[in-house]
Image (cartoon, rainbow, N blue to C red; front, side, top):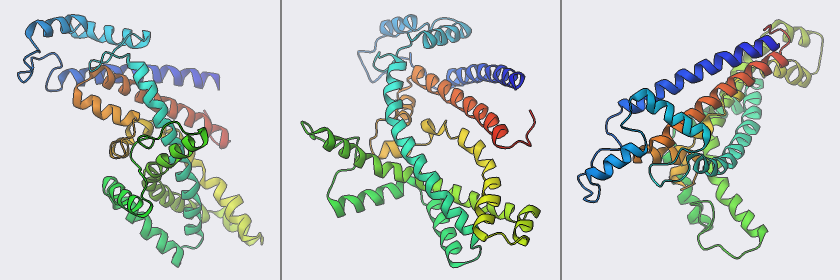
Length: 319
């Protein structure tokens, strides 16, 4: 166990280093430079450009820039080129906003997808299975931005309440309860939209896993023994069908950054995905590289946790 953990940590550190190098090279080779003279801005003089290059070590060789950037990132001295604010401070504030959205969307996805998928597998070919299949493909095929605008129009016209942002504009000097309810209301709609695709995909995956397990010999043996149908489905089949989802659960962590860009942009939710999109438009490379590094760390942590949990829940796995 300890040797496996040690080897895995070393492998992931090596992988993380190569990700850092490759992402830094991609940013360097991207068209357009943050230090080039802007002809549309007369205040952006060549002298200012030169000071900018020296301040951020852009006049140094590429490998020196690499060392300076990650040194500043790890020591908390990296600052945004857009507004001169500390990078980690900006990311942390946006991370907390995205975390609440991610948690609610994940809870909705996993609590709704499993009952839908399991029931579809049990009643395979029936009316419920056909309806679940139809709506799953419908939710999966509708673009997220189109679905979001439709829901915004329906909710605003039906209830006449604001849904954009994290709180109602001008909603100040109110009690803690009303402020909390207002925050929950603004959180609910984007979380539901973020969960729709996950419910559609995960429910179909649960169905296919259940159907595969239901055809195994030990399930047929349990039926032949005369066990109740509920015990066969939920104790013998479902427990073994859940094993692949341990891996999926670990790989959900990076979705906090890249999985909600469209939703956060439409609803003006100040999350980490929207910040990444704005940083790309502004060529704010410290933010871009820092978020890329954090995403890589989340992926590696997720895979490591999945490997360990898979071994714990399935005694047949040998390290």
